[in-house]
Amino acid sequence: MTDLRIEPASATDLGAVLDFWKTAAEGTSISDDLAGVERLHERDPHALLLARRDGELVGTVIAGFDGWRCHLYRLAVHPAHRRRGIGSALLAAAEERFAALGGRRADAMVLVRNEQAHQAWDAAGYASQDQWTRWVKPLDGPTR
Image 1: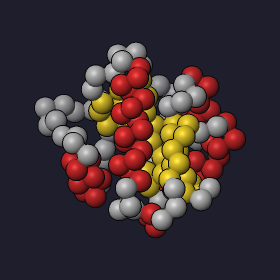
Image 2 (image 1 turned 180 degrees about the vertical axis):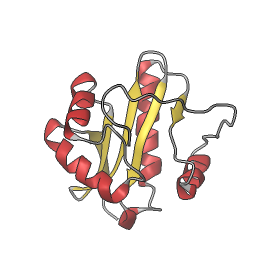
Image 3 (image 1 turned 90 degrees about the vertical axis):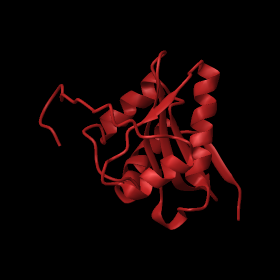
Image 4 (image 1 turned 120 degrees about the horizontal axis):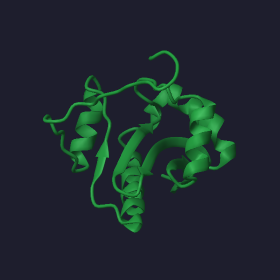
């Protein structure tokens, strides 16, 4: 096995990340467009972490910190590279980032229907909190 490298995305990676999510991520988001990821990258260039093996993009996670809470989004590993520790390595990198920024607890948005992801999050030490629900209001344009 070759070395896995995890590093923040560069501006030139963003189009490839969007293409990657079409294959590796579960579901889509209203923010899954170039303008959305460019805004993320401009606001916090270290939030979008990429995992590469031999130069190939094999995983992503968005480790967003707003100064108060730590949020994880788009943990995605290419289907051909799953169950090889890439997701765990991405989470470890995200958690290190949060700790360095002063974060104290991380939370993740995980689709209810994504049972495989539930197992991965549980194995990483995360727990579902059934007392919470997500409330959403699109701020511009139609919902997806």
